[in-house]
Image 1: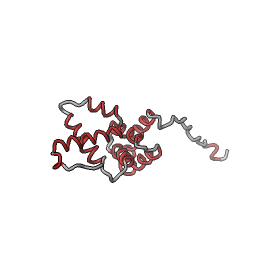
Image 2: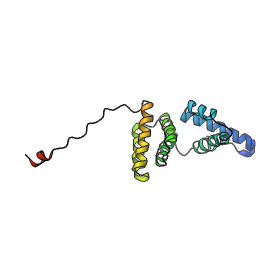
Image 3: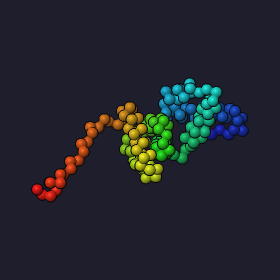
Length: 159
């Protein structure tokens, strides 16, 4: 995405332009329903924060050319799972699906997260992913596997 110089259009117009462009990208990744709900819920406390999110998060960072949106989504899944942020993780799992991330890629990110953030963080992330991906129809409902049969002491002794 190209970036206009603040000096050519003035700081307020440049900020408004960044916010508008960021909102477009946010809608592309997270969907209109999520963004509409977020904007509608803005109040005197959060309205400036919403603009900051559009300008900085979605325009300045997500809009950078160095990584594809799919890769950014996978990074977010690992980070949000590691930080135990289930609400944001659910939002970004939906975005990951919108960005073309596969079930296998999401699973691998959560496995990788367990190495660096700990198994409990990854398991919490896995649970949020299971719920969200099931809601989206990405995760098929699997039949529960039966527990492996244990041999009795008697059969191990050969009697």
